[in-house]
Length: 350
Image 1 (cartoon, rainbow, N blue to C red):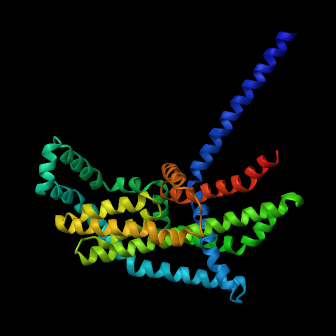
Image 2: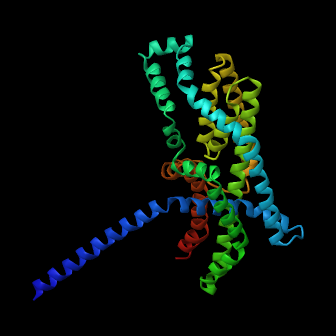
Image 3: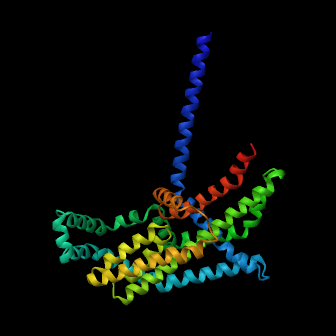
């Protein structure tokens, strides 16, 4: 009888384990299938949180919240319409031309005397790397991979009217229902802990919103600088590179360095002197960004140690590309905030 009980228990454990694995596979498949929808929702939430400080500022002027949301959305649609009408056609043509000429450009870089001399000292490593890079860049199907899967989806959103419409509508909905959703969420918490929970939640939401706006502001500043710099120095594809610089600027720490390398390499197609000028200006800008722009813009957004920023950005970028790197920093800040205000006081009271 005891043996039958053991067999029955083992069977139940095995059955539950199998059901757990099957459930995990079903959930994983559902997440993969709904990747686009999840991206739409995530982008909409971050847009709503990013625009929330603007809505709050307008509301503080005596304007009702619904009208403040309408003003913000009309302004956002105006900016998007301007970009679509004035910038995107040129961006698309320059991008297509850049893809076509990328292999030839890398071949030209390999013929610069300094590069030839350095390549001979390294046993042909540079020429091999450039030839492989040229073949990779020549295949347009690889470009979305370089920007990450979520960025590919993001580009399809902005290129497709339907996807953009979904994001705009969801952002409008999230902004309009932000307060009611927060109140509903707070009511689920016990009354004795509701004030503490709501205070932490408000700090997290405010931190995320300010961080998104701060990072976008830094991206706009960097892209404008790159466009002006490359236009003045006569470097081709200034609009494309400035757009890439904007996307990369959303990734803390490593984004500026990566865009500097890209801009300097493209500037080599003009002359080594031009590339040196671009590199020097970029280095100066990165110092100004690190010690002047970022501290002023980010001072009220998030307080995250530098090491945590690096680890979070790398982990988020590896999981979800640019969007993951953008999301990772405020998530890390939220975790630190919860640890400081919940876990540490709890441990001190024990």
